Length: 289
Image 1: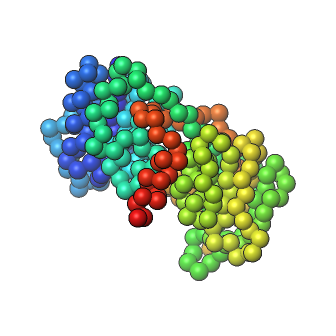
Image 2: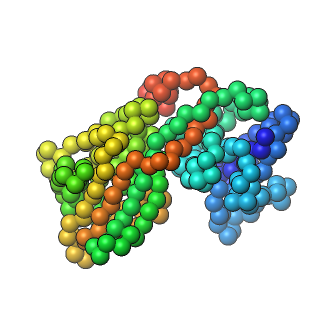
């Protein structure tokens, strides 16, 4: 069995956690490769005692990807894991770690991996496409969490019209709109007043962001729906699209953002029989007590 380890260098200080995990896995006969999930800053010095491999090369013949960091790191790493149809295991070294399966103090559970003593939980994703006014496709990405359309300027609003299967569902002015998966329902969508949806429900959530309208509420739709967002006149101001918290893509008047359920799924590795509601209590309620 070969497992690729991807630590966030800004979270895993001195790479202590990944080195401990590698020692445990290699002690069980697992072949490992340590790779950075993204490029680091030029002034960041990597320890010479660790040999970092190329992620794109090592993942081709891997059986699993283990990611070390917060939810953002896991979201980033899940894209390449999903592209290669690999399961991914998240180990939380961040603040929330809602997608992560293990905490840094639970590394001994990694011994179950080579024995196949784990389950796979498929998480639905969405395909996000931006089409220009001339019909040209400008962007296409796949998201595990959400696609977020936001305004650019402070103290300005963006005009948004949302359609489901080409029928207008809602229209408002505000700070933007979020299209979230059930996995993303506990992220930005929840902060914007959206509902918490358990992952197996597979619904899509449309959550307005600070809408300047009394009747602009969150809408939960079937995964069969095709959701389109049309941007109204923005003049000299800007609107942006961010997919899974990634780099913002500038939108222009007349652009259409289309989201629909993807054929791809993210395969999350589960080593514990913890229910979704237990995780909710632990990550949100218990932390506030």
